[in-house]
Amino acid sequence: MAEITALLLNFLKAIGKYRWHAVVITWVVALIGWVVVLRLPNQYEASARVYVDTQSILKPLLSNMTTVPNLEQQVMFMRRTLISRPNVERLMRMVDLDVKAKDSKEHDKIVDELMSQIKITGTERDDIYTLTYMSDNPKLGKDVVSSLLTIFVEGSFSGKKQDSEKAVQFIDDQIKTYEEKLAAAENSLKEFKLKNLGMLPRDGGGGDFGGQLTAAGDQLNQAKLELAEAEQARNAIRRQIDGEPAKPGTVTIDPTLVDPELEARIAQAQKNLDNLRLQYTEQHPDVIANRRLLDQLMAQKADLGKNKKRSLDPGASYSPMLQQLNVSLSQAEARVASMRARVAEYENRVARLRTQSTTAPEIEAQFAQLNRDYSVNRENYQKLVERRESARLSGDLSSATDMLQFRVIDPPIVPNHPTGPNRLRLFSLVFAGALVAGLAVAFLMSQLRPTFLSQSTLRDVTGLPVLGSIGMNWTPEQTVKRKRRLFALASSVLLLFGAYGIGMAAILVRPTL
Image (cartoon, rainbow, N blue to C red):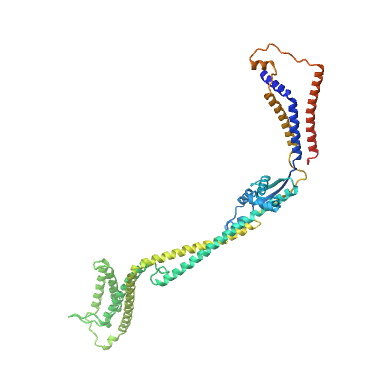
């Protein structure tokens, strides 16, 4: 503690030795600083508050019909890009600040000053933003804030509208391109169909060429089977008309005495047996059973004709049953002829398809490729048409004032009294700086021109013992001079504080100084 006290005393003694230097420096720094502070131009802070309403009833109603813009993100982007160089240059033109710039260097300087002096405060949660600008001209400050507010509001519509128009223009260009592609694909498809007519897959579900060949083969087999059935039925009717050939020792049966029902059963059994023989071998159980049934029916027919002589009546052959059999024979002959024509047609069709089987796969592949290209182009064309309508609706939606509303809470205003600079604070800082500068100069001079201020300091520096010290004996004249110097020093310090107080009072009374 004693060492600290000693150092403090030595510091005060060193400053006291050069006290007049400290007072002069303090006065010079204070006067210069106070003059600068008083001559600073008044600053007026113009401000405006705006509320951005991003909640619209159109947003939920049109969410499924078009792309609804993200209004919160749009407002955030506008806020962050408002103080950009293009906007500030536009602001300069709106308030006629660009005419003050004589060259590009001065123009850039004004732009930088505006960008540093414009402030935007607010939060996305409340959607209330404050625009402020500090200027020494109240009217200029109000004009700057008003123009800045206009740019802020207009920026919400022009950007999205331009983006929507560009998107619609791009989609229109793509639609025209796909229209040309669709026309070319349709022409290619039409020419290919005309060139390969008859070898293409059927639109009705006929399948490809292999499916057509298989279907034609199945139809041919079915026609052959029906032809065989028709021939068997015709032969059965013919046998009934002509009768069975008589064997030696047998009696001829009179057709008029034959049971018609029995004959019908025999014909049906014969038809069934013929159908089974087309599908199975003679050892198949169904074939054996039908053959056994046919033998039984033939045996019954033979039993009915026993001991029956052929009638000598020539009109017996013209019985109603015989006439019916002749009609049935004619119908059977017609059916056989029809089935033979069908079989011939199917045979020609199968032969033609087999002849074309070497080139058909390649034609089908080309046809499938043309159809695929056409389907892809048509699908993309339809999607582009839908997207174009969505883009147009989105552009109209973005430009609608109901989607994004700006409500000016506080219009651009300028206070009657200047808001800056803070002369009270600056005046006090200058005074404090002047005091520090005076003390620092005095201490620095004491270090540049050092003297021994105490016996202990002399002993510590030289390392020699101090035997004694001689005190100063002031004469009356010197005492009077010393008192006068102390009084002048105190008076200068008091005057300095008084000047500080007068300046502070003047600033408080007239803040526009």
